[in-house]
Image (tube, protein in one colour):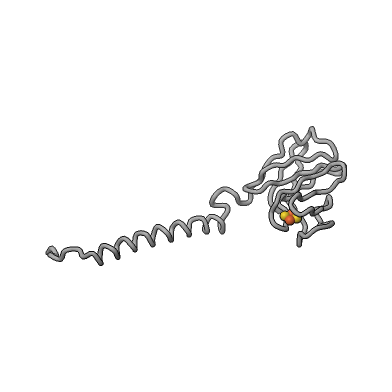
Length: 144
Ligand code: FES
């Protein structure tokens, strides 16, 4: 049995509002879910090989990407240390000085030691340490 009711302007507007509400909810929910479940977008517990590790000398550093994070890998006499390059203050990227053996943040002049600890400046916590796995000449970096 067919309905002989004609669509009203009000029912059309209700439909339009419902469609736009659904699109808005999806536009907000998808990035939020991707943030909460980074493994779903390939940024989870990833292990990345450090290219050219065997050629690095003590004091040298390389910046690599692990998942979605820039990571600074520093070689010292005992092996490798890896830290997130993201400053724990407001998220600028730190750089390693092989002469001073410290990390520097250009945004607010923070200084981090070779162990990632805060030496001066506003950062509330040390740099985030990454796990280093050395297998002969191959070096792998992964989140702690
Ligand atoms: S963002 Fe690094 S010190 Fe402020």
